Length: 258
Image (tube, rainbow, N blue to C red; front, side, top):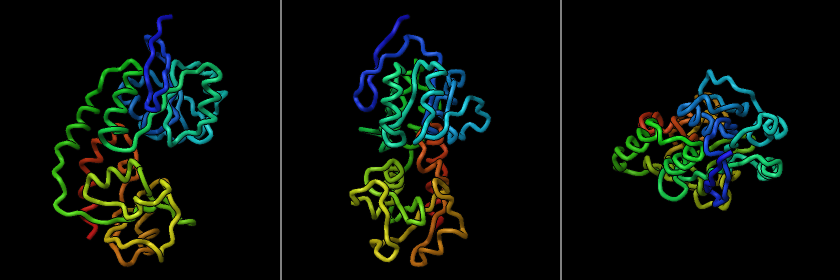
């Protein structure tokens, strides 16, 4: 069988068939990206891969506890993973079983570790040309005007205990592009715990609906000194076809919180 070598976002050489026919994705964003580009390639995904809603493939447990044996039994040509979302021991177990694993590392929209180029490389590893949705995402974000003013926000992702976006996150980069600076960006942790009484000064609270489901009745009451913007967690944290909708929806959702 003819093969070729591609380089993933971690700099690893990954040998894949010249013609890729069977792909397992253990990252929801990447699952959606493949499904929107070449749905017939997918032969397995995680329980958390909720988009597209009609995706009908075997489910392989979660991103942090994928069923390695079940993945191996599917005999994929390639497994798609992510540096942050998946655990190295699971990926190493797949590699040890002879399964090619391609790891993405997405932390910004463009530039180094940028979503647009990372997705293009990942799709190429699957034997796919750059799809129309990815071109539209690049163009839609590039067309956004620079924010006239900037705001300082805390972005919780969990409560009991309270946790938030910290340093070097894709969601933080998305917010920064939209004029919202993360007050916890200097924290040594990417997702630090925090004390409500010790937060830096901020004039906005961004509350996504995942991983914790913040709602109008569960979240804003804890931050009475600043307005809260309730946003889609998928639009804030996923990198894939949702990037197009994110560029169109998030600016208004953030601006409405005054």
